[in-house]
Image (cartoon, rainbow, N blue to C red; front, side, top):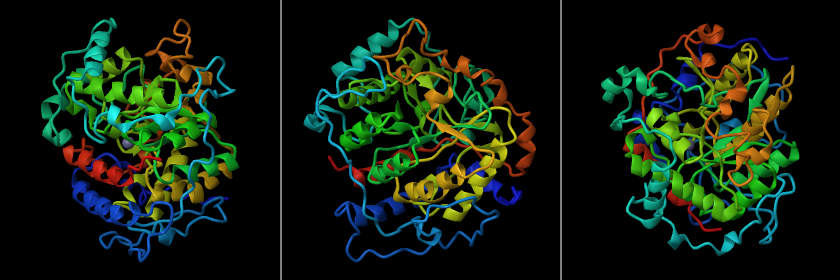
Length: 468
Ligand SMILES: [Zn+2]
């Protein structure tokens, strides 16, 4: 039995953990650089001489405000899930799928390509927005123009987020999620059915994704993976394993930029190359995408729609209650494992009070994020009473897995861009008047990350960019 101690103490970090990255980037870069020293040389085992770093000194000791319903008996102790933690052994892709195999759970799915024959030289530089003058991007630009979707004439935002873009913030017609949480009726931001959790992991596949996949198999759960194109080409076998295991694969851009800062052509390049690498690895192209940092406005939404991608974010029930665990920030020393669990407790506290299901932001990029998911968050969720129904976003929307991919989706019955209509009052529920809004007392300072965010991310992922 959990303590009903959904605390105001836990909530400030809940709202601030993911979005306001500006102040975090310098530390993220430092952490990433440190991580590269211990993980790039020997990613499959503990690096010789690596030591467990102490928890970040600027973070005061945070204690749990509740009792977990269950934990994994083999969980890494919370005290060891810290920035600079020693590298643990990883679980590599367990199966190499033969070219020509196809998933049994998607009728008429295309055959699996020979992903191991992919050449990175045929793709753009990792972790950078691809150039727009390539034949591929020029072709995609033509396709967007011919799509019939009108792209609003909205200027790009500048780095620095809400404080640096007062005119964009004031312009409610652009419906910028980052600054105010505006959603379009087509956005997927929740699951329609109460107590249903659309399980998602972002930014992989990466070194510890295999560990997560193994755990998900053990407990018979499927998730949605929002895949970064630059990671897909680095870990094609893991991506195939995700797909063949029945998880939903979706787009999370090529280089993980704040998308509203890009030109239309750059946005097309980010989407196009990510769709292409996923199709080249899996034989199918996703119909869902998630904006990095949740940074989306009506211009980015329209381009996504023109390219067959359904915008999906995560649940935000008020300005101060966003369903972000904050797990991303452990590796950078910006939060603690205990704080993430307190955030998690706030999320499920809110989840049990709202009249619809929910989607939570978590990541499979770091050892720390996977340790939190497999050791604590998922075991706790699975032991929750009343039980949660935990499934991929496509399933929580009551759609078949075939609708998750362009090649197997029936566009006549499931046109991209209106998928969220199946989730009922998606837009209405993201307004500011939710009954649960009063639970959070903290003021949020939401901002779009600066370009430093992309740099930090590039350093992090560059350290992991091994072609396996
Ligand atoms: Zn991300």
